[in-house]
Length: 545
Image 1 (cartoon, rainbow, N blue to C red):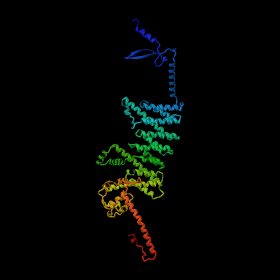
Image 2: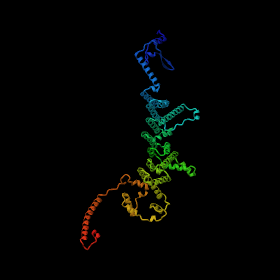
Image 3: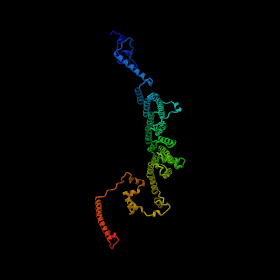
Image 4: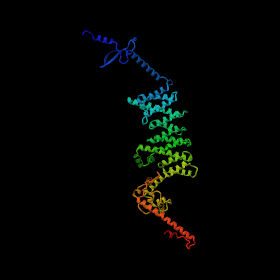
């Protein structure tokens, strides 16, 4: 029309325009420029003498406050208040949990607060926050750091980032565990308690992670602590470990550490530590199979074939269970020999009663012979220990004896019947007369308190066959089926029928009336004998007729 394109652009650029984000103080907005197929916005700095609007002043004030807050965050920790320190700990923990691979380096800042802050409360808060973060970050496997040869190899950026993350995570875990173990030697009770709680929390989630030996090494001495709360937390952590550990490696480490502490302290430990052993989950069959396979390690070809048939994982678990049983019963035997009258004896007897079926007979007989020697002295055992000793003999040893008898009678068909009968009658095993002896015990068993025993005794005395289900059961299963340990008969006896109850009532009424007539007859006979009659003897047979 009569104007040039350059004049339009210059006229547009000369117009004063306010920025939509930063206000006039940030400068003027220029015409956009097309670069690379896209429009790019441009701004020009505002003149020095340009006045600021109210909105621009508010934005400048907000930027100044943000700068001040950033400066406060970088200030020394001693200059911050307790609330500001708590906010800093919470912020660091949230950033770690939100993006652990990106912010894993913040574990070092949490460790600095936990180890160097002047406030004990802040140190405890930072340490326990670090423990809570690590519980969520540590994996359920051990981290293996790369070797020098592996580091020299060229890898992708993802692998390099993962290596760096695992390295920093492992360093943060080691630093936290070392800090907490150092607090166990502190003179402050709250700091020791925080350390025990932190180690217990890390052991709960990290029993398969690196450094489990350091965690157990810090918790086991706390099981013998004089402080009740510390001891309860440590014993609870180990009890939970024994119940949840499937692999068995951490359990074996803990039992070995506890057995070593028991020995080095001359058996002067708190009973709560031995009570933790009652929570152990041991597979007796797997332990026996693994031990047998280990003995046949250099055996014949048949032994090698048998080892190939065993699952490697099950074999490893069985070997660990066998090692745990060895540590347990060696410790139990030491307590029985060294401190038979101490406070540990009831727990030792409870442990023997619980795990007696898992060990070989030789070790069990050795323990029983020591107990027999102790029982010869009436004052050797306390009342609770004596009761547990009776429970041991009544439960586990009886069950083991019944298993042996079942194996003797049912599975060893080559044994002669007279030898088995002599064993049952407690006679000479070489005597052939035991099988020909009278079964006089059946007459006593007719009046047994258990109705099932009385019924079976009557059937045997009458030469009647036993029920087929009874002949197929083992002695131990029969004891469990007809046990009266709960205070009632099992199975419960059937009540008599109405006709039976009516007949019993009539019989009792007749006996009561007949008894009165007999009493009168006896008194009359006595009176006649005293009156000088010829009959001086009382013929009770005639009176009864």
